[in-house]
Image (cartoon, rainbow, N blue to C red; front, side, top):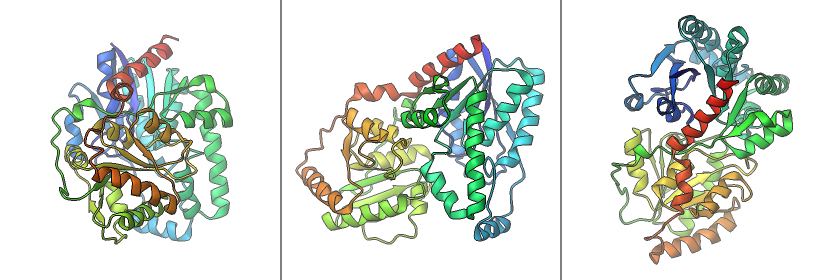
Length: 407
């Protein structure tokens, strides 16, 4: 069996890792790849979900490495002064501890391939140094765009003074190009991200798209729990980006105008971000273990998906869980974007306008159909959806690993 060294900061129990973290690493041994993982230590301040640990196979070797973190007081001062400058990101202090641990592993093990996952992007710079020093093939994965990331750019524009922001933009583009040039293959999970990277830097022949997906094991024994049996219920599940709050607030206001008995439920990180919002049709459930979150979500009538108008490239990872749960999606997404493409091709729901007045007319029709019972026998295109099952996606990824290692 070939061995792969995985540089993945956000490996369980840390939350927020991209699918090519645990979602794929646990399946790799079935395709003749034995992973050895370097991840952040449990002591770091990143959010954690210890229920995820039961999904990590015992035979997978995990090395957890800590690093120095800024104090909360110093972080606050830097944000207030707008000098919160870090490159490649605020996890850069993990670079040397992770590099030292990787060197120890490489001195003992014959590693056939190095794989690094982002965000954080520090992981790629660890892998790049290892490739140079040990001449081992390297595959880099971008969970999201970096230089062209609308959400990240919106955040940085707010927390950095203009001279530092200009410097950071230059460094990010240079670093991104360096990764593309040095890596043997680059995996992206959005078709739009491949287009953006190819247009900005070239190297299109190195970039492969393997989308995110869903894990079938999460749904085999799923129990459905309906939070509001007598109400039309819309669920937003999971993460929440900068720029979502305004769109979500517009949606809540419109829902209340169309049907003041309807309920919109935010579960997980989205609930945390919506704590400042007070509206009569809003419920918030903070972080839950995954199986409970799915149980509550599956008891809703619709799923809410949000993408800011400029991020045509972005496909929120939650869309794949929504597809598998099989309820209609209400997508406030760019009409010509990648998320809209999936909703249409999967026959999985509706594309709503970002304009509140147009959205209101759309929701009136959708809610009226719901009251008439038209969604009781809702069936998306299950054959289309099946392509996003993670074991199938892992096989595609393993084929790329085989190809790169064979060179």
